[in-house]
Amino acid sequence: MAVDELSPSELIDKAIADLGDWRGERLAEIRALIHEVDPEVVEEWKYRGSPTWSHDGTLAVGNAREDTVTLRFAQGAQLRDPKKLFNASLGGKQWRAIDINEGDRINRRSLKALLREAVEYNKTHGYMSRKAAAGDKPILLSGGNPQIAKADGDAPVQAYIAAMPEWKHDIGRRLDDLIERTVPDVRKAVRWNSPWYGVEGMGWFLSYHVFTRYVKVTFTNGMRLDPLPPGEAKDPDSRWINIHEGELDEAQMETWVRQAAAVPGWFGFDTM
Image 1 (cartoon, one colour):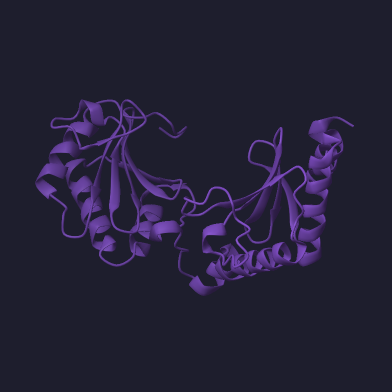
Image 2 (cartoon, rainbow, N blue to C red; image 1 turned 90 degrees about the vertical axis):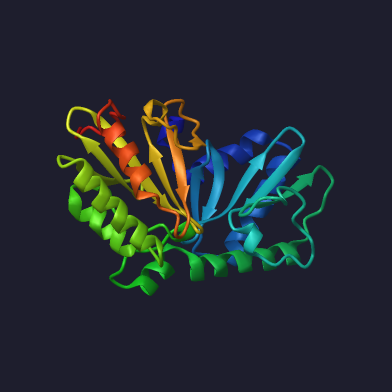
């Protein structure tokens, strides 16, 4: 059977067998412990070809390197670790990892306790629990950003704005009103849980996204604006500005919107 025809579990079987040394033995041991702790765990093959175990979101990812087996916990920063099993990726805001070297023994009891906590965390903080808590309202993702299905037109943008939390809702409403009056023929859409604004035949020129302390407004053609928006993006054509509570300068934003709508933007959507 071709590799691309294998299921995720079969790919994990193959990865363990192909290692053929202590690293395969350790991955197999970790895999067995995960299934013992959570019989409902789902095996996946993700993150550029890595054994992945999920339950309402990613629980853990296993990798074998030349001299190390690493088990990374997707929400490790949120977990208690009284036995100090985490010994890698300690500075991240989300992931934590356990590096296992040849000759190291796995503390099975402590690892099982950590895995149980990871499962419970996903059960109470994962997509299904957040969906149940939200009811008919959109789910708020990391930083309070609304989860809105991709769609074209004004309706999904208004749904996004309505779900923007706290003072950010007013920022979204004011931005939308400003863009509409500045660009009467503006096109709208939601992609990647962000509203997008464009002009027919000219592409998309602006999007914004909610973060915990600010709303990030990105101009896809920001390098053509005068003055330049302050944030320098990885995309050489884009610039952005973070708007904190009480900081929306409508006069400056209107100048940028008018300039951005008049020059080519980003032609990333098939509908434009």
